Image (tube, rainbow, N blue to C red; front, side, top):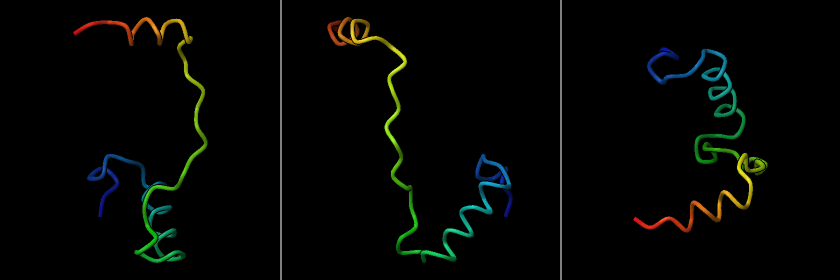
Length: 53
């Protein structure tokens, strides 16, 4: 197995393997993460949402 095949680092692959060993395959998947603050202002977001296709 190669980290390059998955487009990630060796460290990330080892994390996946260790998580699979500890929680089992049935619980393997993305972990919930903390929501990030938006990098754009509310005004810009409203402007973008108002654009017509």
